[in-house]
Image 1: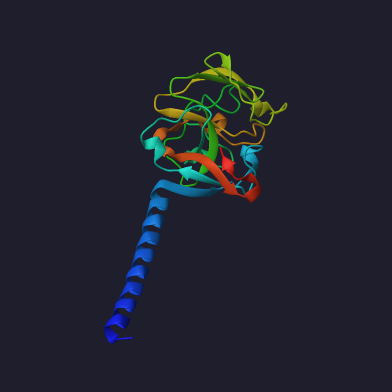
Image 2: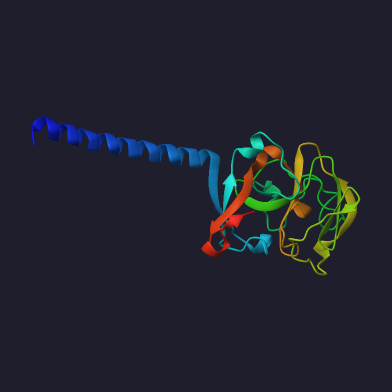
Length: 207
């Protein structure tokens, strides 16, 4: 083999290695910008999502369209959700006042929550037995786990969701810290919609 042929072969290998490295870097960059994995940390979304299950989150979709009722979202809750006793931004609403919280505390937390959208901006909403009554109609929610007789399952006074805000609830209505207690969240706090589960292998599928 001539020296020129050897050099040509080694050059091709270097070029191939550079292409592979560049492709991996681009794939990781796109993944970080468009799609993020998320691990389910609690039982609040059971039976839809179990503790330890992993989902993929579309980080860019909601920049071009508004969330819809029924979608599962990963988002930053308000700082009022982090306290041992959850805080509502409106002291006259929320726990102990017969109605869901209608306004979050103004600052957002740095933690991530995952819940389902149950109310949109301008909707009138109340909750009975863990079931959502939206604009006077009982929502169809075949995916939820019944709430039981817990006093946190019924908020019979109606609230109106503020403009640009979304009301979030876990599917496990008797074991979920959600907008009932710390209020609807603004769209800018939403990270993205969960669209598929990829772990464990027996639960792979679209949401």
